[in-house]
Length: 167
Image 1 (cartoon, rainbow, N blue to C red):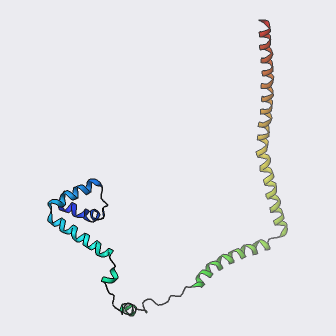
Image 2: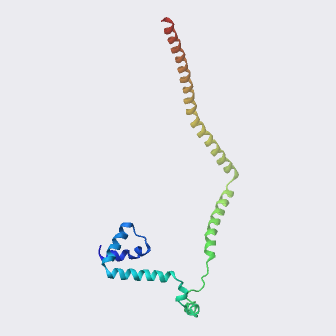
Image 3: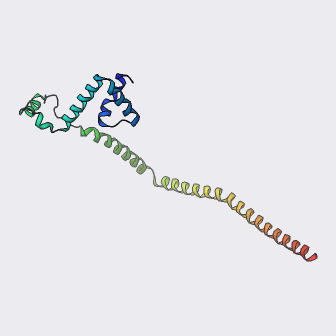
């Protein structure tokens, strides 16, 4: 393996996350390459530093929060108001449409509404009759067929008994 391929794997090697075969190949390369050994040492040193108590090593300026807060442009992030009238307008249009439908239905003469209701009921009954009539005739034919099969079964049974008796 060349240095470039090994350098890509040095961080994983330092953490022990490589497979056994990859780890063996990197270790073999490290024996012969000073540059990669130095880089691995730097990586291990950096990881050790990051694991140590960072607050002991790094001091934040006391006025950091103040400087960040003062650098924020409040005019840029001014409060935005939500337009609730737009949402109410959507609901309002739906309510107006529903009201118009109810108004039209109420303006229709009662006789027409009763006639429409009766027509719907009669149509439902007619559909039920049209569907059930073929099914009932099929059911009657199945009953006749079952009766005929039962009769044939009885006749076949008598014939078999006569054959056995004749032997």
